[in-house]
Length: 279
Length: 271
Ligand SMILES: Nc1ncnc2c1ncn2[C@@H]1O[C@H](COP(=O)(O)OP(=O)(O)O)[C@@H](O)[C@H]1O
Ligand SMILES: [Mg+2]
Image (tube, rainbow over all chains, first blue to last red):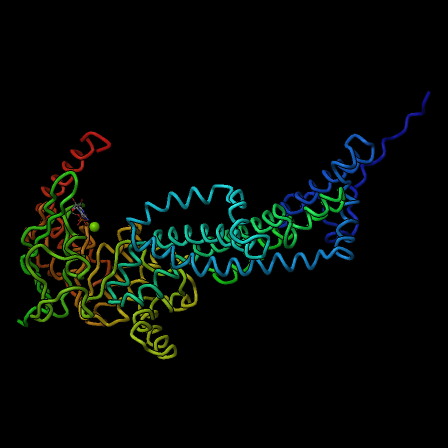
């Protein structure tokens, strides 16, 4: 028979070690903190990676189909060190920059023109919208015939999708400007030039910039897609190369890298937008 | 008595729409003398904003004309400054940049225009907020920003279309008081368009009652309340009797407006 003992007094709850801010309970970290969603996202990703790692390690998923996450990470280093990952990144980014510059140079005036001519604007808007939603990358055979396996092909593909997004959003941006603000300009007797620079453009800027942001991302993604399809250029070509060599970890490494680059680009453009227009 | 600085002569306006012709204004005539504060009151839909747009030159009339100092005007005119009913501040500009806007488009340098704009920022009581963006302000503060922006161009005639309509009653009374103060300080000739009875009486030297469609001036009521005025006048017996007099005329028009609105509701939906 056990001896009866007085119950132990309740000890205070254990405190967390000095980690992410001393002594803060876990709850505040994952619930109240500003970066909580990001932390949850990372945690979910880590969990998924761990599960995948286990599946591959225990042979439940063949290694040829899916690379273990750890191998993928190692492969990214290998691609960078030996197979010109950074050069490929540079090639893709340069193509994207050129494509977006051309798309903006054509898309901004086109969007303005569509706004100024509502008859055409309303007619073309639906077509642009349809194009915007369509997987335009599928027209790559045409592009291939036009430009061959060159940077002109990949760049042109980026230009087309960028142009559609920028023209569409520019038109919508101008069309959404409050008519009252335009009337204020009229009341102050602005010249048409002043009306454009002092009212229409700044008022439409947020949406126009959203078009530029989407256009950039679309251009980047489509350029990589065409690079993959025509075996030419930067990151997309690298993915197709590793695929052709049955270098599964390398292929996954390249894909993960592509995702990181697009995500990074999206983040950068968002920051740029809030920096340009804080109000 | 001096010649009127603003004259509206027999202005008429018709809107042709898919469902028919709306006769918005018929033979409307108004005179405003220098330094005078005149209110035009009428029920919703009686053509007040139409009149506002025509006087401001943002819309053309089908008949009649608008004269400033005896000269007919066409299009917007620098002697007439407009304040709109809707949200009209530029959200990408700070208060002082908003107020300095007319000076900026006239080509005045930054230093000089901000200095001058600050005078008007102070006049409307927004000093301390000059570097704020409109989104950080209340509706009443934004409307005062718009007022300061219009005054900053120093128009000879201030023309306002229900500038306080979107604000709550108490804010409206206090802003009305502020407006009286400003107009007295600047000796500002003002034509205020409103549907608010007490606002019209509180602020004006004369109240013009408009009839419902087609709009025309049905009656003029001179408001003989002492100046300088504050919002306290609403407690006086004279104030109440003016409200009563104007309401007598307005009531029939408001009823017509309401009936028109209800008929429109009853019409089959989805033309
Ligand atoms: N652009 C327009 N097209 C057609 N009808 C209009 C237009 N503007 C105003 N109206 C009509 O004219 C009448 C007067 O309108 P408005 O001047 O805005 O009245 P208020 O400002 O007194 O409420 C209303 O019946 C309105 O429907
Ligand atoms: Mg109105």
